[in-house]
Length: 276
Length: 289
Image (cartoon, rainbow over all chains, first blue to last red; front, side, top):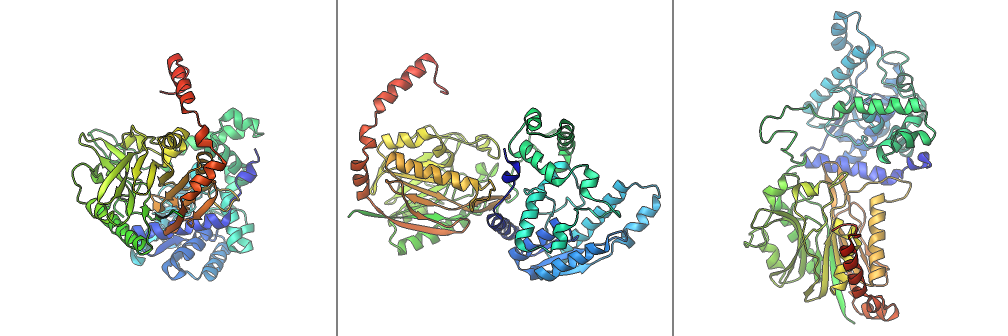
């Protein structure tokens, strides 16, 4: 199977579905405005383009939330996206909120520090949904969700997410089609939580490779042996399957101890769009 | 030349709000009347929306006890025939995905969805009971057969209705769009269009497919309703993703012309099939009950 071809998508059809999704689901919930955290990376920039088209740029607020260690070009890229899309924007330095907490734990490792920053950005995002009377638009892509490469209640928090069923390489195709600035397309993906951090460095494999493997395992239901027979290293396949399994909790609401005849989660099963 | 003006109301729904959906039905009916449409079809579960889950039991309607919410539609069917979709409750509290054909102020026929997809993204079998009949029925406009979504993914359903005399097949669905590719349509749209065209060709029938639009819990319904003629050719197609009233004049004379040229119905050997089915059932080699 030519997996790369399977991951290629019609950007016009996809854009139409995602834009209509944002517009109609937002309207169902009784909202016309959106707020999103814009890092200047590929995913949040793409979400910003889609939200601006769906709701009109005047109804979208992009929050630029740098920390003192953030790369300066991240803010520059975010500002370019704001200028192209015409959305409203606000910059808030999260250092004064984050640093006092980090200073309590001088030995804190990068994972904890990154989680604190991601969750502080979530607090600012959700506070602005009230201020702006809008909904939080998520920017996690399918690759991140499947690998659990995100902070629970941090960057994974949103009310609706237009990108959650697109692999990173598919987001890239979409970004090219909408005219994303070349610098954003070219730079290595990074959570930008510490200097020199890159997604692919931290994960230990490239998006181009893992997207193909995830596509076979998730979309085409390939088992371990079938994936290996497609030329993937057995160790790589094992790593990815282990990540899929160990991150399942991040993709679900908290587990509830069932004691009654009908409980939230197991058998009180109403759709989210109930009555709208 | 005998013509039948048909309409497919490609609409969305407010999930679980029958009264608001009834309003959109009546709006479409009024537009259809203005266009002199004689038969207007609505999508699967058009009066409630699709992804009901536990809501199904709360909003289900009964066709047996003069349901007040169905009355305006039954009344409207004095002017044009209607096919409407809703979750149906029977006297013994079983729930079905149903489509009712209304004409001249009466419910002429109710089809209960026979095949309930319960796999992958679908969980209809958890909430609904399956129907147990595949019946064509006579209307003032001709003999008709109704199938709901997964029903027409089983060849035997359309084939049965054809043998039972249906010249016009009314397919209704709430088909969630999925399957990205370089093609300018979603994979699910391409599959359904191919299926409908194939039925029209093999059965030398009119095949009308009314699909809905809108989003529910992130699922997109892709629209793209179609009408194929007995020669297998496309007569009309609605746009993808947009609410639309698709209309067409069916040339009923084409049934005769196509079937004289290609007498598949005349040569069909239902008795042979019945004999072979009986043998398979007897020897236990039949795939399923």
